[in-house]
Length: 252
Ligand SMILES: [Zn+2]
Image (tube, rainbow, N blue to C red; front, side, top):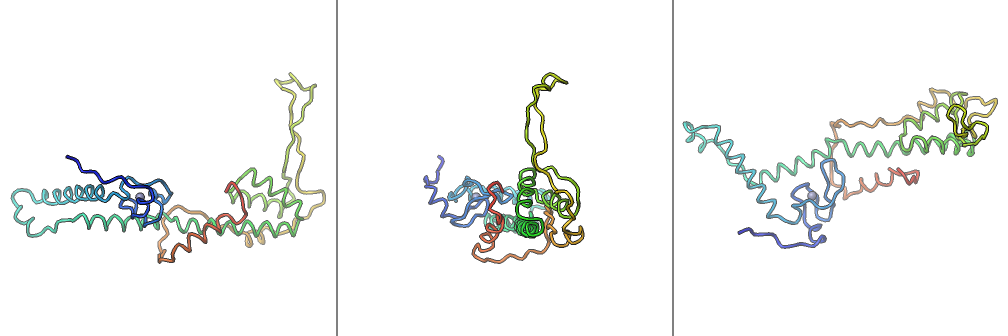
């Protein structure tokens, strides 16, 4: 007959550490990329974890033994140290913790936070150079077009500050009945309603100066090699949470 663990409330399960993903008591469960998710099946149900680990351990020990064959079975008794479920659990937890580092998640978040600060700085400097109205027009266009794709946003600012190239910032849709049915036309056409720069504009900054002042950190996906980790009581995560959205953007 099967024995089942008693039904637990979500609060009770949250109070238990997770044997699957390594979440600490009170912390959320997460998948292998560190993204939060609902409870792992095993959380708060140590009997399930124990059963799985026991099966794994039996498999491993069986395999190791089988490698000796029947002829050398007596050697297996002398040489093999059987793997225990506790060994497997410890191995698994250490792997989970290393994976968070190896995926570069912490470093990735830090770089995104720094880029947010660079963007905010770039906006302030631009506003002081070309005026707040022009800057907010360019920002509206860039953020609408590129969202939080910062390299593209920076490209547009570079063009606006360092060149006299024309940027079409805003369009309006117009209707001309005389165009209807010409070239399969429904009579609608767009015109540029706002553009940069104004006539006679001199670039406000050299390209070199711009690149030096507003360099973004590149976002990488490979493993960083030196990320010592210590327990700071969640201070790092809380700080990064603040840094990630320094512009107060609702879609970031
Ligand atoms: Zn979990």
